[in-house]
Amino acid sequence: MLRKQAMEILKKHGEPTIEKIKDYPAPAMKKLYEWKHGKKSTEGREKLLIAYLSAPVPLKDPDWSMSEEIKLKALLTEDMHAKDAAVGVQLKQTVRALTNNIDDLDSNSRRELLAALQKREGDDSAEANDTGFL
Image (spheres, rainbow, N blue to C red):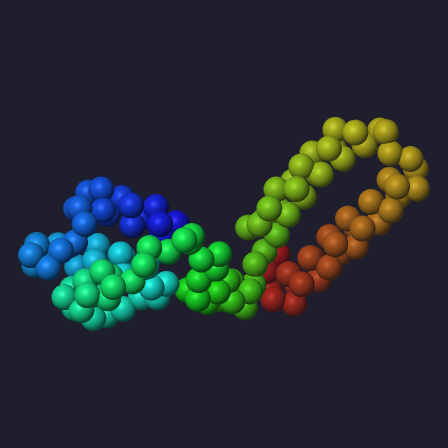
């Protein structure tokens, strides 16, 4: 991803040089530095240019960056509901399939499904009564 962004920057602005560094956009220079060094920097354009020019072109993009790791950890600590994930889509598809094919279920499976639904509805109504909502 960084490689693609770097190539777009180079295509748009050209290769940065000492002569034209003052006209080179700072965010573009920061992105080029990040691409070559694999980390972000808050240094000025001139220092970023020197570091950029002295570093070799990366052979490939890193598989996983530290910022991506931090984002993942943030996601893992937040509550994620099934409706917000791929499993939510799968659950909706399962419900549709069950609804459309309920007659094909054997009696034990129908009873098991009905008992699970009734238990869940009972839990939901008890929870609503506890919170004062109906």
